[in-house]
Amino acid sequence: MTAETLMLICGTGQFLITVYWVRKRELREKYAIVWLGLATMLLLVGIFPTLIMDFADWTHLSFPAAALFFALAAIYLYAFTVSISLSHQYRRSIRLSQEIALLEQRIRTLETEQS
Amino acid sequence: MATLIVIPAFNEESSLLSTLDSLACLDSTEFHILVVDDGSNDGTAAILRERSQSTENMTFVSLPMNAGIGVAVQTGLIYAHNHDYDYVLQYDADGQHSVESIDGLLRAATVDNLDLCVGSRFLNADESNFKSTPVRRIGIRFFARLIGLLAGVHVTDPTSGFRVYGRRAIAVFAQQYPDDFPEPEALFWCTRNGLRVGESAAKMHVRQGGVSSIRYARTVYYMIKVTIAIIIDRIRSKEV
Image (cartoon, rainbow over all chains, first blue to last red; front, side, top):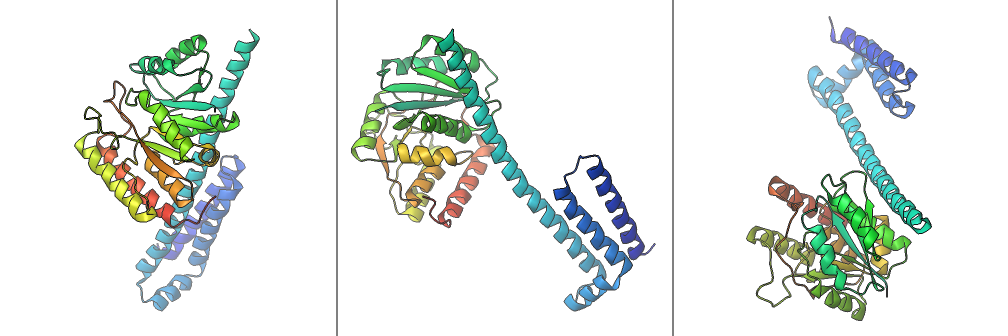
């Protein structure tokens, strides 16, 4: 098996997996776009292997090193985005729990006043 | 002048009652007490339910999960902001802080018109005053130097959680407050944004119960996290 065939298989697989999870409403389209973009890139590289070879020539890297560079860049970018997203989610959930706690106190006070 | 005493409490069943008893001597028309139960899984919530029914000037809020001291204190600040309090006094549930120092702390805040007044264990000349463990003192000195270097202000006890927030500080911290280990960060934030900061002598005791939020391996995380937070805060633009 050649590297190009492997990329074609992985790209197609990634495409199908992403569409499947969006269809199940378990993955938001917002995040699916990134994965579909990555799958498209894999497919493009599979169909036009010279893309990575040209990049490898241009940067004086070997083919595996150039492929690894792209893979690591994709992982880094996505993991970093997830960290930022987690930080947003953390702040939101904290604010929600604070609001719940304060509302519960307000209800308790009102109930005591009424009884 | 309405003051809200905010007591963050996480699993403080062994010391909470004596802490609340010690505050009973304060004027109940001037001082209100809000205990923030930070998702405790011991008898803290039960103590609070019972105590709040018999104490007119005391109430409590219960966070649905343990979220850390910063979130607990901020919940108190949001409450104070919503109820239009003039001052918030942050006070430990574990008996470390001394009720006799409250008056001096509030007086320093009002006389000098401070937005944040920190109770310092090092400004108290009393020999019996608990000045923390040697390792902690190294950490305290480190943050005092760091804040002095980056903000140009002299502070002696930046990690002290015995502090008074004025209206301006209440308003901004109700919106945004550091998550965990917030004391040095909040102090630095105030100095950087032109809020008036000062210190007042405070008496402190050895903790009576509960477990410190800063232990063992967490100490290393604490030092690194707070240092990075302060340095990054230094390069932010003014926020008020």
